[in-house]
Image (tube, rainbow, N blue to C red):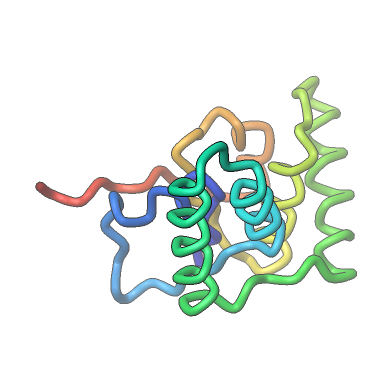
Length: 130
């Protein structure tokens, strides 16, 4: 399984996903996308973001932040901090959900997840061919 980071979900149409792979998305990413709908500056942006979120709702059963995920968060965040890394909580929580499920994280911002790559595989998305 590969957990898609919010930045991949936003631009999902740009990326080629492996049809033989199982993909998941965090409820935390859904919260970020919901905020993006509410924070849009124009009606057109609100409509486009709402359509995107509705499409994603049909595609994903969002991974919940459950007790096992919080246990993984403690491990992932503390281990990253012990290395001196700056721990961004949203990224650490998504990494923890991936860790909890034995999954990788796919992100367009590899540096954001580098503090956690000792416990969670981090992969970059592959762009679709034009």
